[in-house]
Length: 73
Ligand SMILES: [Zn+2]
Image (cartoon, rainbow, N blue to C red):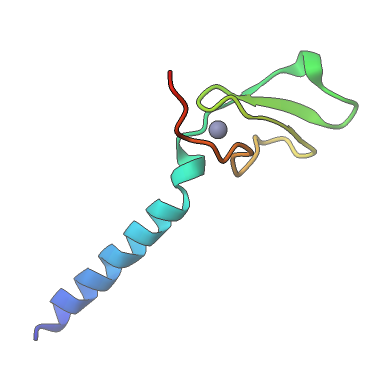
């Protein structure tokens, strides 16, 4: 059994695992809405799944708040 094949399989498994883990967040596109900001909290709205979240940091939320993905368009 060639070792490169095993290494390739392991690498593929890792990529597939991380891709599966980030499935809910990767498609999320957060839009900042400063009109709904609360003091130090920044309001973000996900245009992909419709989730709404507040963050205390500058960046958008790292994970999606809405777990429901199978929503009819
Ligand atoms: Zn989302």
